[in-house]
Length: 75
Image (tube, rainbow, N blue to C red; front, side):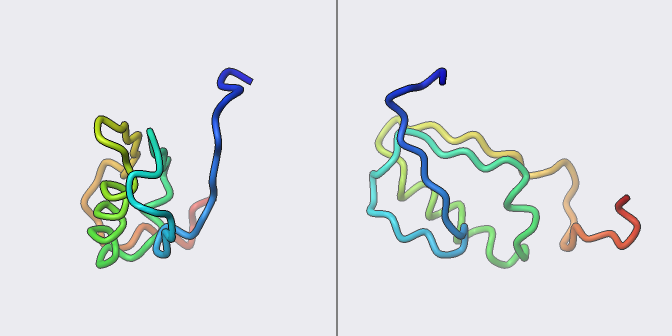
């Protein structure tokens, strides 16, 4: 791979049980939009807590301010 020394982790975004300052970067690509809006602030606070000083966050949060991103006719 492109980053052979990388350690990757996967976990429920609403229950991030990692120690503070655990990561150099976090990546969340269109995952947060599938969690109720009321829980977004807690997730972002956790991302900040998990990042080492100077850490990077790559977050794709969607382009519209909507409470519910569910559509019965998606396909």
